[in-house]
Image (cartoon, rainbow, N blue to C red; front, side, top):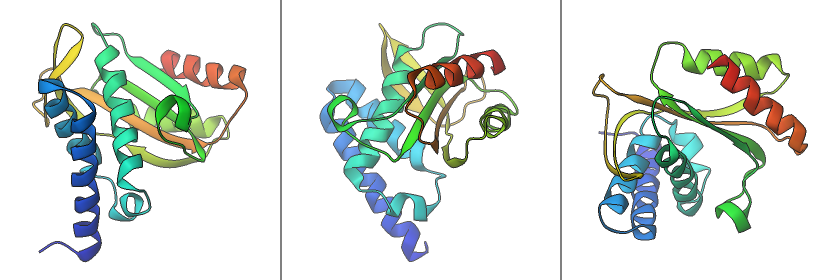
Amino acid sequence: MLAPDREIANESIAAAAEMVESRLTGQEGKAAAAFCRLFYAHVPAADIQAVEPETLSRQALSAFKLAARRTGQAPVVRVFNPTLGDDGWRSGHTVVEIVQDDMPFLVDSVTSLLNGKGLTVHLVIHPVVKLARENGVISQVSGRARDGDESVMQIHIDERTDQDELAGIETAIHETL
């Protein structure tokens, strides 16, 4: 039996996954819903309960869309301040999103870099998934399979608003990866 807080968190994740699926069509919607469930699977219940399912859905969809943009082996990185108008959600933090081939010490390397810049890491979401893409669209998502696993990271850090600083963080992450 799950702890009551985990049950509530799982209900929020299920609601978020339904919202994600409703925003996309066909197989992509199903893949996005599966991604959403995997995205939050290991996030502490307290961190999920503190956020509305609508926001959870938008956060997961943001990472999913970044993953869909990835082609080849190169990592994709986005450092931004989500807004309701552009992203459908808002955070009091700057968000770092990374999608790249899974390998040891990725989270440690990135969080060390961020801490070294004097930034506090408030939340790390880090599923490792297998993504199948067809014509630039993610068509299937599954948990760890080892071969071809991709590391998806969404890291919430102290809010920064200076565009040059955001670009510098993104460049430093690319260099670290």
